[in-house]
Image (tube, rainbow, N blue to C red; front, side, top):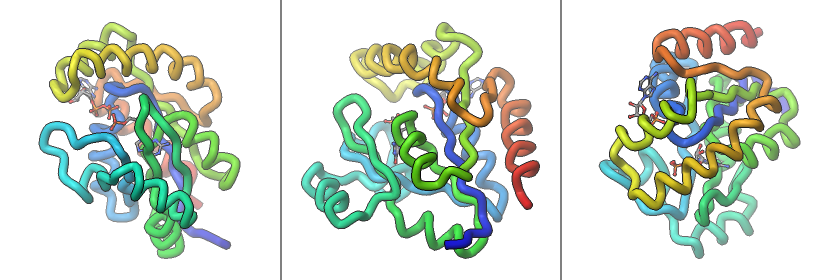
Length: 186
Ligand code: ADP
Ligand code: 5GP
């Protein structure tokens, strides 16, 4: 299958600012964000079909057996996956598609689609990461600690990505990611 649009994989530890950066990127009409499915519960103001499709484990496993995911993985005891159809439809239309997914998912996407562009969003330090995660106010203490432990495992994997961008100043980070996208468009 020949696609015109880019497939962009954006990863990084929880609290690094991926969601904030992606929100800026999708102001570009040519860019679409893949809405993932998950078995975790909605947090804060999250709405079904906007931040995620919130599914039961049974429904998620049904979708796995129907080959409905481009990739999926487990993160802290829950399933997360990228529904296949929107990604393929948008890419056929020539849109650049962002998958905002964790590191195992990125590996799977690289296997299926080696020409995808992988970008790791890194926090300036673990201290700043913790501050952001706490400042967001969406997580229980238990979840914060689990996410920070997971962040320590994920940070060394930045080396496997095509690009690593530090999210210190938000505008600068967004500008750097936009440049990466621009440079990779044909
Ligand atoms: P992620 O999607 O990676 O889990 P978020 O985008 O939710 O992270 O960001 C985590 C918190 O950090 C949010 O409260 C967000 O407003 C804040 N944040 C994001 N980027 C920056 C930045 N460059 N400087 C300061 N705060 C930031
Ligand atoms: P959160 O629970 O904080 O929203 O997300 C937890 C982690 O799951 C984040 O690293 C996020 O990028 C990742 N994630 C979200 N959607 C998907 C997906 O469809 N597939 C994979 N592999 N990871 C995902």
